[in-house]
Every structure is written in C-alpha cells, then in structure tokens.
Image 1 (cartoon, rainbow, N blue to C red):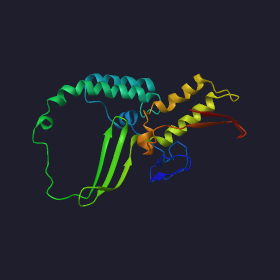
Image 2 (cartoon, helix red, strand yellow):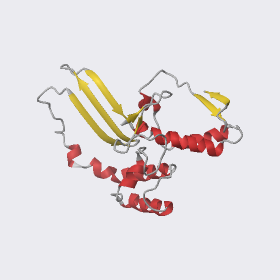
Image 3 (tube, rainbow, N blue to C red):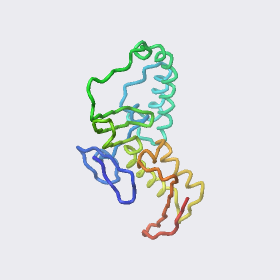
Length: 218
C-alpha cells in the first residue's frame, strides 16, 4: 500500500499485509527498506570470490544478519560494486547478452505493461497503459526513494533528536543529520515526480514543547 501525508509530494509505501502504523519501526511495523543493504540481508552470499570475502567480513563486523545499521548501506554498496567489477568480464562475454538476435518483434499492439527490476538504488516498479497508437494514457512509477521514504523520515527524526540540543542547529550538526538520508542515495525528483526547476526547502526546528524556535530555508 501507499500512505499519503499532506506535507509531502512523496508517498510512503508499506507492507499491505501488516498495514500502515505510522512512522515507526520494529517487527510490527509496515515500514520496509530496499537497496544494497536490503539485498545483502536477503541473499545467501555473493557470486564472486572477492565480494564474498567482503560480504562475510561485513556481517562478522556488524554482528550477523540481518544488519539494520543505516550507514552500512555504504558498505553494502561497495560490496555490490566489487561484485560488478569482478563479474564484468563474464557479462561482456555472455552469449545471451552478445547475441545479435535480441529484439522481439511484437505480434500485437500491447496496451498495458508492468516492469519490476532491481536497480542500484533499489526496486523500480513501472506500470503503463497506452492507447492504440502507443501513447501513454496512465503511468504509475514507484522508485527506490519512495520505498525508503518512511525509513528516511524515521532516521532523520532520530538523528535530529539526538544531535540538536537547546535549539543549537549549526552547519556541522545539519551535515551529520544529512548523513542519515544520504546513505539511501535518494532522488527526490524521481520519488515525488515533480521537477519545478528548483527545490524550495523549509526546515522548522521545534523544542520539546512543540514550539517553533527556528526556520531554515535553502
């Protein structure tokens, strides 16, 4: 399912069989994450020797599987990059990939299609409907940033509460909070489906009483 909030263009997907229970985590939460760390958590290992060695080292360091440390996304991303580098030669010589007969000519005019693929940022889901001329009439796209959107909000909230003291919001503190969502490699243009040409951002800082004490604009 997809949850909507009035303060954001981005939707917040959740596990439908669990339901939306707000911006909370834990076993009873419908919030989930995708991308490198999620893939490694779900895998049994890597298919190349060097990547497998680093895979084992990461989980040994982090205390086993599954690992939920947000900054470990960077580590997982490096392991996947190492796997890609090792496997590049094999893919470049794969007979199915280099076969010139790769195009399938359609025998009918399709009017609807759904594609799901794992991209570096995470799962991409594209759903299109077209008219008889192939003109798109409806499109629904769920990208990795949307899948991770609820988790990003949770992480930012926790980082802000831990780092901001007495309303003191210095540049260095903001950079540390930013590390939370940078780990997900987000693309908000993709996630919001909005390209106004600029990104007007207003960040309101509240104290423990819920009183606004500062406003930051880009």
